[in-house]
Structure formats: structure tokens, C-alpha cells
Amino acid sequence: MHDDGRHDDPRVTGSPGDPVSRETDYPNWAPGGASFRPPGWDAAAPPSDAEAVGPEHPATRAAPDVPRAGNPAGGRVIPIRRNASASARFELPVPQQPTPDSVPDATPEPVPVTDTTAAPGASAAEAAYVSRETPTREEDDPPLAMEAMRAVQILNPSGEVTMPRPERTRVMCVANQKGGVGKTTTTVNLAVALALHGNRVLVVDLDPQGNASTGLNVPHHTGVPDVYDCLINSVPLEEVAQGVEGIPNLWCVPATIDLAGAEIELVSVVARESRLARAIAAYPGHFDYVFIDCPPSLGLLTVNALVAAQEVLIPIQCEYYALEGLNQLINNINLVRQHLNPKLDVSTILLTMYDRRTRLADAVEQDVRNHFGDKVLQAVIPRNVRVSEAPSYGQSVMTYDPGSRGATSYFEAAQEIAERGVKEPVGRNA
Image (cartoon, rainbow, N blue to C red; front, side):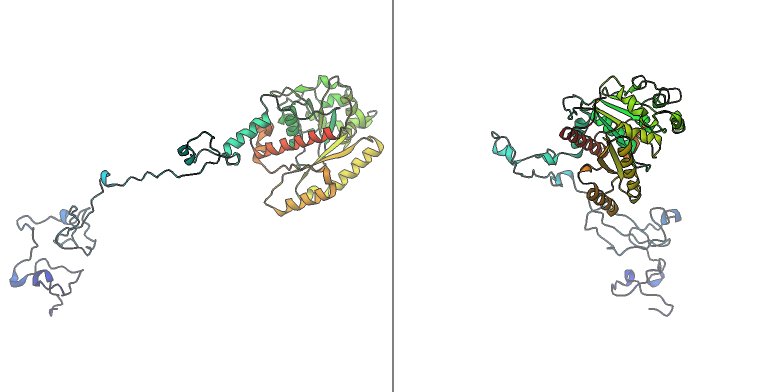
């Protein structure tokens, strides 16, 4: 180091061990007062400021530690200047890209798999290699294929698969005074499932909201003949029933907003509790099943449904509040059995909106099964968005998305109900 603070530049002295400041450059200093210029510098045409400080040579970028001469990698040379006054020329090795001929073949070799299901006459080579995309066992079917199989089973387009038909008409009342437990959804989907498999089914919408009529895409606006005319004006049921489009074996008696006033008008009517029972008994045709969708109350409309039915189907939501009002419903059913309909029986309990992720749902299921025993169906209806979407399209989940879990669960419930009806025949001619 000199007295003025400068270091000796090894580019001039030739001593590689002497330190050089990386922040300070002395382009005009040289022994004997001559200006120092690196090799390749043209004194007559010095680089301009735009060339020295350009987008490809930022003036503020520090030069990396690279060899000063030579390019052992055989790449192209990239000039980099240390700062605006720097004149040194550095060579950066840029590796060459490999040619296509030098790239090894990356095609994987076929994986040998022993196929235990190969044909008896297949050769050894055919039995040694099996495509990974082709399932070799039934449980290995892709999800879409299994969903398609379930859809075909539920829709039954050929009509060959049938559910057992009861010897006599089964009139089932779907009742629960708590709202939102799935009464209408259960009524619609069970009726559609049974009708698609060879049973003649009638749905009586006894709820003033008319949700069952909406789910079956049956008109129920003001002015349409409905169940109100049957209860108040004694209109025959066959004049009110409408066929459900797309399902030949299914009929529906719609409900309009007029039914909301039937509770008050029935008070002064003679034999007000048995008006619906007489209307169903007078129907000239024969049905295998009659489902009555009750309102979420224990008024005269629900009493009419309990008197007309021989069986009660109670959907129970897997929540605590659903169990709280169950005792009151059972007490009212017992009162109707004692005074109005001795044949009435709680034959079926269906668990709905089951969420297997919660312990509460499992606890409710265990309590219900311990209390009602064999009356509880083995099929459980899970929470499924397809079940909720279907009514907005005027369909049941059986026809809206037959491959969904909701449709499969209701199909299993309908099949279980049909098999129980054959083992224990109930009902009467209608």
C-alpha cells in the first residue's frame, strides 16, 4: 500500500498475492506515467458511456470471481464490466446444451405383473404383462364405472329388475311433528324407487306447502284440483290424482295453498278424522303402496293421515332435537290406535341426515336402535347435496343423480321396505 492509500494492482506488478480493492479501479494508473489499457482496448475508439453502462452491462453489478483469460468450458464469452469506468473483459463459461442424440432414452420398461386372471390359453408373454389401466378384479373398477353401474341398477331402464310386491295395499303415513327431518324427501324418493321397480305407487301430498308435489313436478298452483277438494268437497280421488311424468307407475294427489284452511273447515265436518281414509278406500284402481306426506304438526290433517294408514314411517334426523319430540309423537299415535284406528302400527324408522364425521350422529343411531329394535331400517340416509339439489329441478334424487350416495341409500331403504312387506303382509284392499 502506498502513502496515498492505493494498493498495487497485480495486473501491473504481476504479483497475484497482493490484495486489490474491489470497489476502487484505477484505469489511468501505470508505472512510468503511461495509461494502463487491458488487451483488446482500442485507444482511438474508447467505449462510450451507453456501451459501458447498458442494460446488458449494469454499472452497479459487481463482477464475479471468474478466470480472467481462457474459457475451459468452451462456451460463448459474455463481457461484464465492474462499473462505469471499468475496462476489464471477463469470460464466463456457458455450458453447451446437450444434443438430442446424447440424451438417453427415458422410456420406462414394462413392469412385469403376474396376472392370475389370464385366459387359460394365453401365452406366457401375455400373462406376464398386464396393463395398469385395466382392472383385473371387480373391486378395482374405477369410481365412474361403479357409479354408472349403480345408476343403471336404480333407474332400471329395462324394467326387468323388480322389487317384491305386497299381497295387499300398504298405506304408509310419513309423520313427524318436527320440521326439517326429511319427511317429504323420504316420501318422494321411496315412492320413485318403488315405482321404477314394478310397484304401483300413489303419493298423497297432505302438506299445505306442497313440497312433495314440487319434487314430483306435479302442478299445484291455485285452481288445480287437489286433496283439499277431496277432504272438504268430497271429490273422488281419481279425479284429482295426476300421473308423474317419466314414471309410468307413479301418481300424485297434489296440495295447494287452499289446504292451509282445511284445519279450520274440518272442525264442523261430520266424521272429520276419517275423510281421507274414505277417499282412499273409494279409489277404483289398485295400488301396491300409498304414501301420505304429513305436515309438521299434530293437527287434523295429520290425524286424517294416521286414521287412513296402517303403517307409520317415522324419519328421524340424527340430531338431539329430533329425539326430544319423539315421545310426544308416539303418544299421539297410541291415542289414534286406541280410539280411531286399531290397525295402526309404527312399522318403520328411518335415520336421515346422518353425518358420519360426528359422534352425535353415531350416538343418536345407537339410542334409536336400542329403543325401537328391528323397526329401524339398516339403510341410513347420509347428508348429500344431490338430495337437496334435486327438488329445484322438479325431480327426485333417484332420477336427478342416480349414482349419488343419497340415491343409493334411498334405493336400499325402499328395497328393505319391500322385502319386509313380503315377509309380514300388512294393509288392506283399497
